[in-house]
Length: 311
Image 1 (spheres, rainbow, N blue to C red):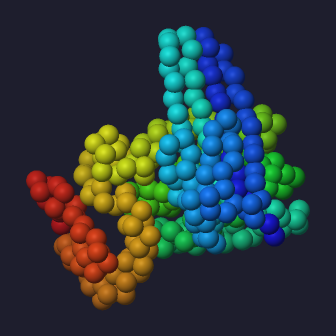
Image 2: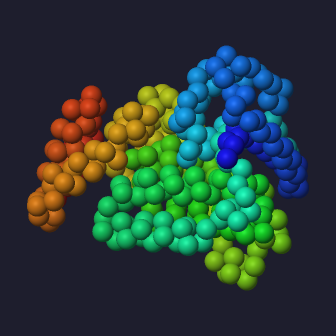
């Protein structure tokens, strides 16, 4: 099955309370994507820096982006509020997808298995185990091409994603790029939905205003993953959730590459430790040591919040 590189541009303008949305979609066969190749996307040059089976690096609009071809959905939101009457928002969303036969477009059974396993991991307090499952879920969902089919429409896709986000199936400050991909894919499907997509079930269970919260996360995450040490990015990072500060090194690409393996190692190492009062200190100490062995100097919540008592 061929893989395609997709670029979706969504332009939204609101003039005196009246909204207008324009969507356009370009895709390129991955066989054409070779290092050094430059092509024009919406009036601007996009240049392939490198590409392999897993990752593509490309330059676009004076920035360099790194995109995992299997699970990542990368968005570049831009905002323009030039006056009080007219506000504009433009989005470019990049992702890879696969052409599939109609019979293979969507498997309710497989999707249910993935969600069921993620639910059990949550109940066991091991949401780190959801990292590969969420990646696989995104992979399955974004490969349903095109956005609309007889099997599953954009509104239902957004509903599936919202259920993962709302039930904390992934930690946004452990895997910000993965969480960003969920948010970007949710927002993309909301932009492609139609009123006719909503049946009785969705009318009852779908929060049609949830996109406002997702948009806030998208803006913050776009700042964070572009430069985690930037002052404004750190402010966005600290605003992602809770009253406690979290080491911004967790927003780096290297952290996200290794955190699953680290947590898997700690699960074995601490399996006989009592998980009662004081366990957090044993866990943080072991985690800090495991990360140090991989070249990451991490500050635990107790180090980041010295005036807070943890038990």
